[in-house]
Length: 75
Image 1 (tube, rainbow, N blue to C red):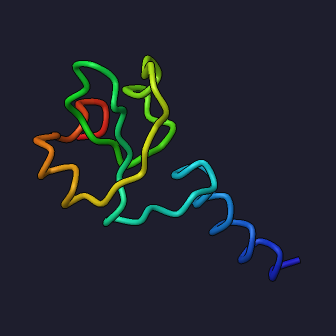
Image 2: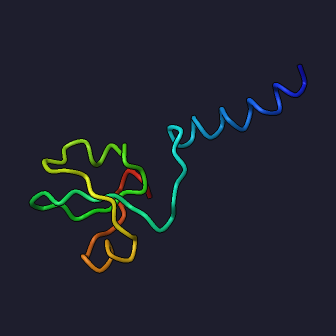
Image 3: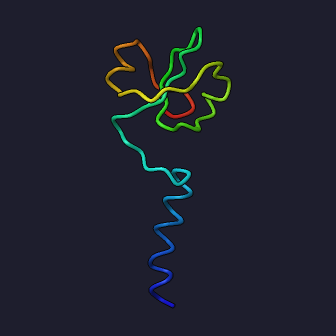
């Protein structure tokens, strides 16, 4: 019984904090729609909910080169 708790707590923590995804600090998500100016660490960020195009995964460096800044929902 004790072993089960030790395993479930980290699994539950990862699920709640990242929707089951691991965050890669070098990868971010952007919308290429007209007027899009932000990048997002989380593909399911509220700031991407109105994206009119496909959501693209790019490097953080590339997003910054494009003049993107961090989404206000994630700072």
